[in-house]
Length: 346
Image (tube, rainbow, N blue to C red; front, side, top):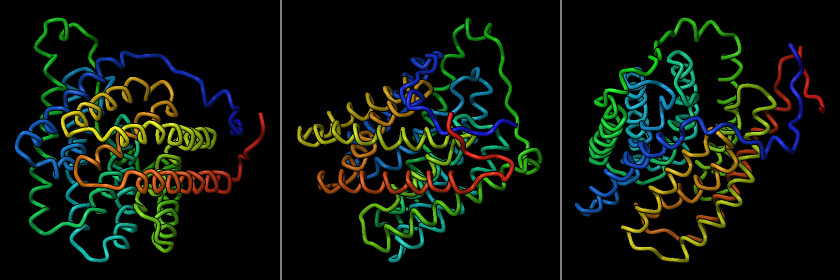
């Protein structure tokens, strides 16, 4: 087995193929727009965070044909709705900022096993841990749990419908059929999965506990950043991903500052969120760093839709915690690797 190498700077700006990303972007945009518009029309935008995470269902199975995509997205929907409910439940407790750290670590471990068994695409625990951590950061009541379940489920159902609507076209039935299956036994028999899960859990505990102790706002961004940084298939990919996370976030925060300065009304913010979601999907398979330029203001605008925020403080917290979480991921990647391999320079 060849040794992993420190990434060359050109890997940060390398682009992958387009891969039909425009169709995925349209599905993601519709899936996000419909529930957010419905909440705005009914004056319930405070529930938009739950709807947004339910809409993440549309991001799964991008390269699958309709029926296998439906099966994969159905599992993804159950996963995302469960993550929203778990996070909202944690939000009921007064010590939620402490409780959420081990909860996110456990969810990341379980979802990683689930993702490997089902061969989900995109793989890993990033979206589920994001949903748990973000929903837990919002103070809630027992009644909020039922609302979260209802809104996230309805939003996920819309994503499932959007994902299969193209099947009515005759040409869809002529396309090559992709397959989808679930095998927990195969997933558990892969020795590298134990190391991956252990690294994730330790990274989340460190990235979550230290900002919470220090008192930096929104510690969950550090946990999400470390999950993103550690989601690469090998050491080199993880280092590239951490670099992308940092650089893309910095540029994306500039775009977020412009959007906050514009002080957009709710309908315009919804439109911006949908456009950012679609744009992110156009680039997620091509360059993760560029994707983060759009994901960063998307995440902040989602928060602004649901709650009144201090834009400047939000941007500062996002920068500090993203860099910290990514650095934790880099350190763990450099220090934790198989004995048979070493990080070397290209």
